[in-house]
Length: 357
Length: 188
Image (tube, rainbow over all chains, first blue to last red; front, side):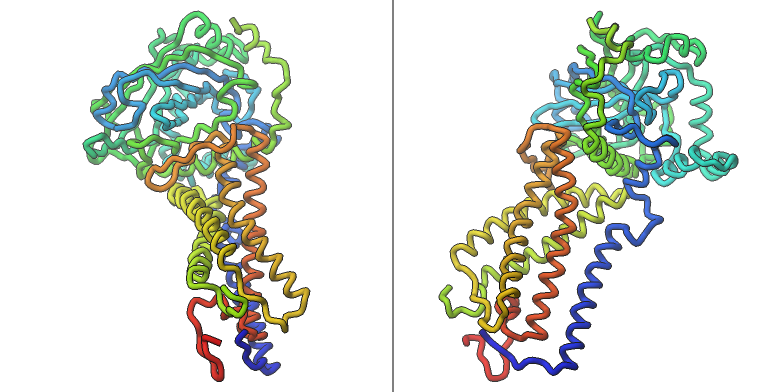
């Protein structure tokens, strides 16, 4: 092999210093990229960690929306949505669905009446593609940005009595949400709740036209709005018992309504509802046909990441879906790593077991 | 390649440097994407999955090319432990180039995630959904990524050590262009 004379000892020391410098610079760049040198960076572990109650997270469970029940069914598309998106789920037809009704709490055993926000996780499969979504029942999100959501979690867990006051002063949009939370009735059933995407997504149709869209699954059941006190009287696990009983009796239905933004409507801020009167399209019906306990249910191991989208639907400039995807992945990684803590073998919750047909 | 060859073939050198850029980019994208909740998370994730599959294909091609063309012998002047370290580190690098993309793909499969690459290319699932398996694969993917980066830093340091201090032609055997030296010719 080609050999050169060895360097003088002074040159060799210089070379060693150079090599050490190159390696240190590469390692430093790697550490910087990974956020190890930036404690102020909002990372998925930090965001997910902030969801935990003071006693720590419920191991093996979702880090938020931890209380829930699985279902399967179909999405019956009427084909009207194809005007907005070429997603195979919106072509006329009937497509299999796996979903999960849930409560917005990190506690899988929280009494129903203590939880203000309810959710719907959904996966619709069509044409070899999945469309996953996670929706909630408020008509707008509490805050405008992921950073503000983290600040809200920090303030709500803070020992400083003025923390929430300070948060609200800095985030006026939260007052709108607090107004809803304090005045909206509690529905007597998951079957009566409307579940909203809140985030705007970009729908592209076969002609290549793109529109910003938010969507809602609106209940077809008769509404029974209750006061918080009356709802609490129904029992701590009423919602799961109720939905299992209802579905055992007859399939439950929601209408998918796609709402299209007008030019100028805010697509990057889910705390701002779009004005009434926007163009809307009824795209089909979600039919919930079978309810199963989460313990062995088909939804248990699904991450309802709202960025897992079919062709024809994409994220918009709304910053939340990306932040949710990053945080949901963290939650999924943690809970699957804690699978030994998940009560796979525990007896069914009494409330849910009595509801089995 | 005959026993007297002092350099890897052009194809091997091209693959080496192309993959060096790709793998370093991959490791930085990976460690960066899991540290952020910003909108860039999504394009980084898509790039990570796409580049991972490209690296897997290039690594398999490179392994085949290595079997066909072999490698120049290490200089006789290298001490035996140094030769052993060189051989072991190269086995480790090949193993990780192939294992890391497969671990990532398997991890997504075990997590019941769709595997969608740039341009909407959808890959099939290679494992059934399983929580315990997902956790194992995730931890392996993460810890082996740090091990891979550490091994690359060692490889880089060793390459520079050969180039600047030992000056024994080992670095030149993989250098992108031949550097004529005084008293030697590239054909030597």
